[in-house]
Image 1 (cartoon, rainbow, N blue to C red):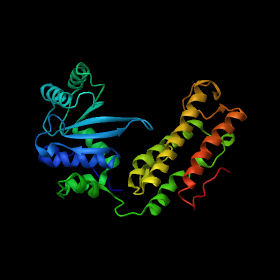
Image 2: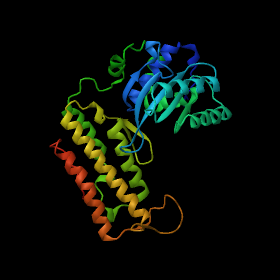
Image 3: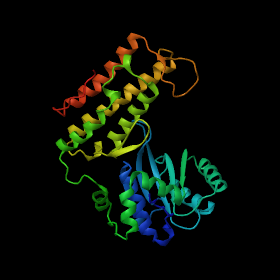
Image 4: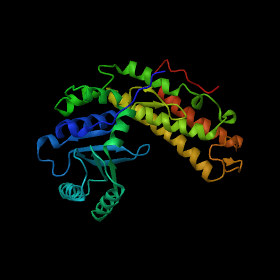
Length: 312
């Protein structure tokens, strides 16, 4: 059998503007919202891109994304960018992210994190060129192919949004049909008294939240199945609001499940194996979790009449 060798991408062969367009397109693809590309104006004041990242099921971060397509990221460069950004946007920055075209050593990462802490920047993320490429292959393989094939990415933010969108012109009714597929899995059909693996159930619930929020749909073991429309593809404000509430209800189910694990309502068998499927669930808690799951499914049904996923 023939095997395919993946060679590292040499981002340094491309211009700074081309790299920024790719970084912007990736974050659109990854489900970030409120994205603004400042670098193209030539007066970014340390802020190439601004965007809102969904951090954990409803929470979000306002993040400055700085594109550094050079051989290495220096402390002087990173510190200068962070200082300019905090001066330009006091009290509006939750996190800072460097997306680099080259390598970044562990020692340099630590120095940059310390510099960020000194500026009261709570979180700093640093991607080397290799890490950026890995994330592109995971969430935007076709963007990487277009980039490497020399296809020019659009210049404006709106045009890039359309360029990245893999569901152009999709009506809400069709989008909901595709989104409904993420519920067609045991985690939404199996009563808790019959659930064979609670750790797998939790992962499936988290993956469903991610699929509805970002369009990336995975199996229980983390394998990406395919792309589906996300809540951000919906055009009707009411429909989008309902789907956001569905996501909140699913997250409520997740939080209820975690709370019952923490307070001892759901008890592990005690073998200390993290993926062991053996748990004790009282009937009352099974009913509580089933009801929380049903509320999310019933709400989705109000906007998708043919939706037929129900507990067995």
